[in-house]
Image (tube, rainbow, N blue to C red):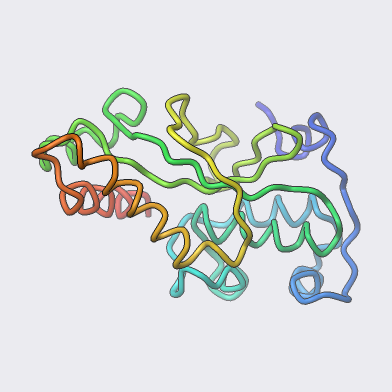
Length: 195
């Protein structure tokens, strides 16, 4: 079984020391965390769950949980402070019965072939770091990614939501009778099953 620390070492991610001089670094430092790898491991082991405010990645500390957005934005913010070139990305990917079997009942109930999800993750020199799920190191990205863009931590709120919703709206236009509302409702039902 691949251990997170081994993976970070194998991709050459610098294990930068954290000082107590910058905002995010101070929060990790108060948790007794002194290196970037320790911070990544700490966030990885936290349960998946929506934070009370989708755009405030600092809530991961007080609420002891996070989504793909808040967990990865928090680590990206720390990486910025310690000068490690991690990238924060959003991937638009279709979820269907083949690549996500647990969504089958939701798709059938909404009469959909798939839903489009927007998944945040980190990358370092083309290596994916996905710490969304504390139970696995296997990325939830699938091979059918439609589009991926790089963002900044401050863009996980309104920007990500609008980008995701607009992508769905553009995708359903040539595919009647599918509607944005059907797909968004099915997506929300799926997210509820994750926690």
